[in-house]
Image (cartoon, rainbow, N blue to C red; front, side, top):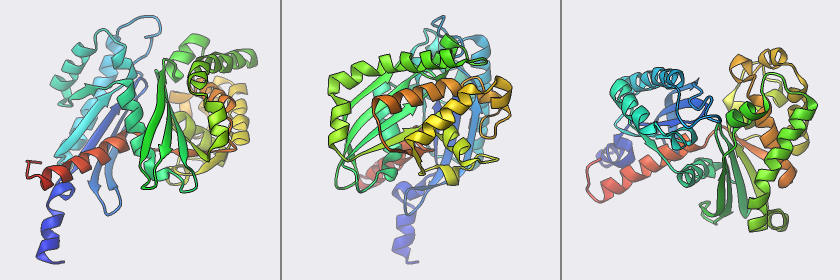
Length: 340
């Protein structure tokens, strides 16, 4: 490699180690990465279910127990980032913190106790970053994409136009105050009968209807070559169960296509199981067994409202969007001579 090439490798994006934390209503997730010729290479990661938004359907504050669970997870994130020598980072908190009256207290406590500086982002920014993380999965044969992200406290829906350079323009988006945690707290998660599950699906469909009607989406989707992309733990879990995986394998799930019929089949199977049966199912386990049915109801409601023969599964989203933007920022800083 020439000295010029070596210099290039030490400048811009190549000069840094990157990290991104996505703190949602249910999960705390970290990615640490180095740049690669195409995108980035993950060198460390962490994910823990913390249920930060637990019980918030009945009050407007984060509980002490939930904050402590999250602080413990963020300490692990901080330790991993220090060990990997992270030099550029951005860490965001979403629905649970947006809706909590004591979120500033929690953000400061997290900074003091873990060194992780969280930024509470808007629902619009969350939607934008989720799409940015999925761009590499856009199909060349589609002119539009409909991206949905089923979270713990909210569900983001993003309608985009795919440009020739594989970038996208967000045409419409919304954030529903309905996620797997909030829906499970409303309808129950441990024991869910057929009637309760059907009521969940109808409830979510009613919430989807105004967005559909405002933008005439069902008709518009039928007129374009539209790619449906689902990014969330629910979507990847359903895919893993469909594949019959004994252990979750991101390499097999991320980027795969699943038919609408298979989404319905797996969702109905999981909804008909007891809590114990779901807990014993690979790719679910005890931590998700009381939430997965609520996720399936949201997934099914989306598939009912905007029918598509198949859906692309994305085990990526907000964190990947953060990392890609941090790398692009480093390149701009180097080009303008500003410090990295």
